[in-house]
Image (tube, rainbow, N blue to C red; front, side, top):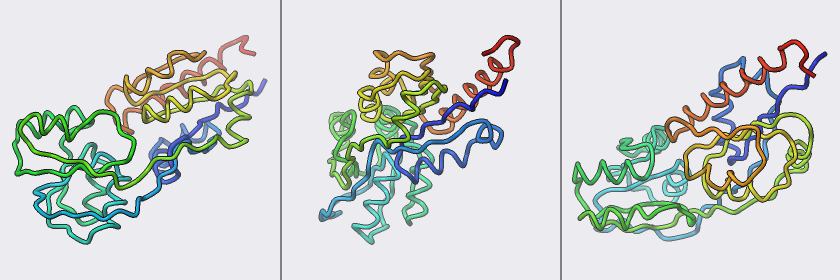
Length: 245
């Protein structure tokens, strides 16, 4: 008996989802049906960005890089970034960028140790978990934050609702606590295989009915992709077992 392939449900904004899927091994892509339904929309804010007196920039996402690059032509300041993807986006935009941690906690710890020139400016979204600027300021590195983009919640597509209420296994990588909280409100009766970027992302998902909830070894896309591959391989083995229905 031929079993339907599991659904890989991508909920990130389109560019990030496309990049994540493209980086998956080809055999993984070939053994899933991909459904894209962004649950967060990225909207740059029409704000004025003043860098007067600022000694360095903080970027915690490629979205912050893109929004900031459109607001200023100044590329003279060093950029301290969370994650290599963010750092590479900043380099591509013209900044001298360094990855100094895989999450906000690691960034704060690294900068507290290295003591770069300050004040620093964290260019971020309206919605953020934690307070990087406050933590660094408390550690003796004066830092302020400015929102340069908003993250609007989006309704799932009809196709996404269909697979979530269907019978085919759904593999859902989730990358932010806000997206996870939104996902947790959706009607879902399908067999769910939930893959969380971090413990903070996993927390809102624990109240759901799921087949498994896995947390990435490191809070980055590469580690989450490993979970996708692990999950796809496990489902393939189960379907291949004698007597599988």
